Image (cartoon, rainbow over all chains, first blue to last red; front, side):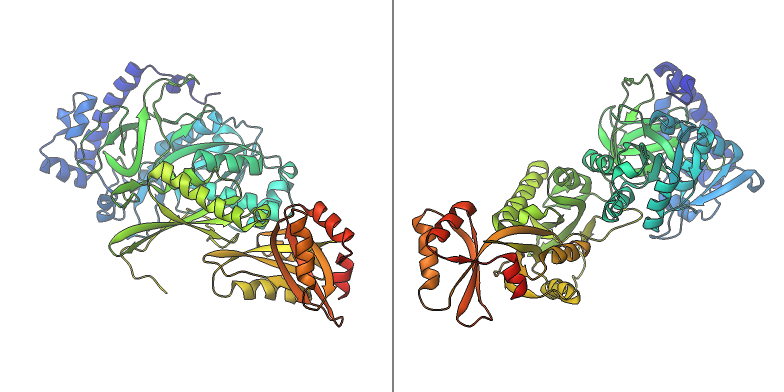
Length: 436
Length: 143
């Protein structure tokens, strides 16, 4: 099923023509209405008329989170405040929040692109959808909320937290679709099990998980635990929120809403645009955004894009699950390591829980990693050797995937911190004094 | 013959043993015997208690990794050579001991030995035919 078949199956030529027309308009809008862009373009010696082909986008300077912060709160808005009907902001943990504004048209586009991946996952107007994302300035909850309402599903805006209540409502209301971060879905599943429920106590059939990466191994564990078919989607508030890309039923990459966003892959170190199919940092330009148009935004997410049409019939290019963030990338003994690689190495191992933590330390000028996992399988306690074998097995898996030796620490269940929002999987102690 | 043994995964971390033992103590469970070898990062705590099913549930509810298995429990006279005799019976019969631990019982002059072997049924047969007495879960509970 497709929500907007005409847009979603457009020919490559059609997509590119539309993108070029919209790009020209967007650049002009930025130049005319946002002083920040006018200044940056002038400094770079670029004027909107220089955009003759899509490739000409590379003349434009990049936009970063820092640019949005410098123009806090509304300096990057291109539409007058009377036309802005909603504001969202990303968390300000590393400084000022980044604030984005939406016109009525922006909200309409947004709910459509959310509806696309919702429908692609199989959701219909018969479904009852429980939104366990935290409501508020964060785009996740309201983004899904409006998309689901547009599709006609029954929305339960339960928000995050109070897991036991979540589970009760899930059972009593006959929830069929769960919307949360993958980490929280995992936590819900563990808690339900602890409370004595099995997946047959629920009517869940679809899981729409997002706002943080989810490896295939983690996805299958959630699917088994809750009895759902789960899809992944991608978005960031600076560009819109969830819905920028989303998986279809084949789950071979997330279809980018190319009629509304132009995607590039660059080398995060040099800023150079990489050839199609390369792995690098995703850079996005909004093509339909009125409230806050964004030119060449550096997402810091590492991925690659496949432009081959998909088996599902959609022609929109598919981005791979993000392999990490260019600033989350750990360099250990000169090797580039993404936490997701460690995750995929350990999630296939039996006897441990899906929760893990990576601790990086520097001792005698040498980096070393410790991977903490929780032993949950009591049958391993028959012989001490079984536990040692488990430890060696995980160590070997990581060596195969990363080519790095690491220390594996077995812990008791529920001793690794749980998160209701995004998971913090890495503790890097190389540049800090460790507490004894 | 066989008695229930509780095994608990334990990290070598300050206070963990106190957590586990405290947790079962709170529920009025009496430990008859226990064994914990010195380890580097983690170990397995083996417990023989008066109420094994309750102990298993309580520990599980408190998020410990737990398993309950059957081990052989024999009662011998508390005097030199008695343990040696029992072990000799097993080794002569080709049964390997994986681990064992012993405790002196309240009944004067008797000791109890918990034995985990590779072939339980054969061990029972050998010990029985050599007149060695077994303890049951009831014996443990009544100690």
